[in-house]
Length: 230
Image: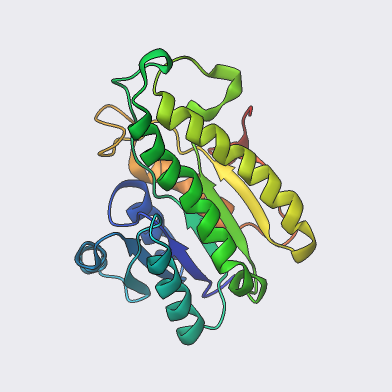
């Protein structure tokens, strides 16, 4: 695969920034989405790769999504890869029994509705892509198999994102759009905190899912390129 047209949300730092870098290093065109345009531009400047394109994107703002759809449609006429990475509120300070529902609502808007709206809005362009892929960046915090009562807003929205992944994969199989969820593991980022593994290691599995061959898997949940429990 060469010169895929890709979008990475929440791409100005952490996992999103590294995923953008790795995809660009493979020669793909990557639209670096960030809530503030200057943050996206700074990221592109720092990475210094010619195939990176900065663009303002707030996944909770319908007009922002529509503006990006218009931009991609006019400039490229299609989309190959959508990496839904933007996420908020790793709420270690809460338990399920004392959750602040305003925090939960904010998490739902970004962590669930955001990826859902992005996928639906870009579906016509994905159907025109040469190798269409949707990668939903999830987390082991959303695994039913290991779920506890902590980080309730983050965990429940990632659980829902996993369910959305399965529904999308089954609905889009006939369009040859591969849809998978990927957990990058505990990574040393602003959200994950210090002590995690290198960001490049976490990003690798996301890039792998974004560049699967046309006969690749769909509807799976992966970490380090290997299936994990839902």
